[in-house]
Structures are given as structure tokens and as C-alpha cells.
Image 1: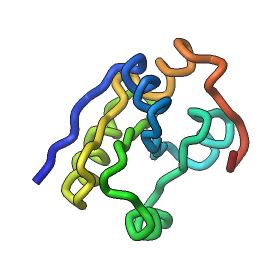
Image 2: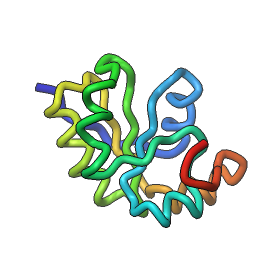
Image 3: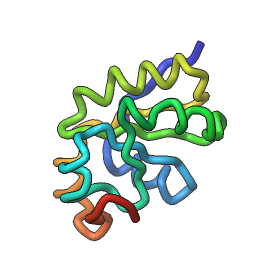
Length: 109
């Protein structure tokens, strides 16, 4: 059974450029106000559909506000069978400071 790893924003950005999927577990309003460009909003309502359609071999980066809640979500997704799961250290708040050009707004891309 795989476990998740914590990852700093710089490494997460490099993984994104290689095709990693980013999921954001913050509330819908926070996601709409700003999120990592290309990320998918994931909550209890969309979780089952996301897992059903997922490529389990593709790296997966989980983000939240500050990097705390994403750790338990990453652990859960790792136990669902994703081969490579990461929790973004510092969460979206640190990401926004380091990569302001990689932030999008709105409910969807």
C-alpha cells in the first residue's frame, strides 16, 4: 500500500509541468476565489467520480489552505490505490506567494 509524501511548492510546480494532477480540497468559495491553475476541486460530492475516472499511475498533488488538511486527504487517496500522492507543503497560501502567475479564478478552468 502506498503512502503520500509531503512536497514543497517548487517540486510540485516541476511535477505539474510533467503532467501531475492537482486537486484542491478547500471549500468551493475559496477555490473560486483563487486556485492553482489547472487544479480540480475535490470534495465529498465529487470524490467518487474523481476516483472512478482517475489514472492511478499519474502523480497526484493534494492542496488545501496551509498544507495540513491535505495530508489526511493525500493519505486517503494513497490508500485508494494512487501510486504517487503528494501533499503540498504550505498549501495554496504559500503557492500563491511563490507562483502568482499560476493562480486562476472561477469555479472551473
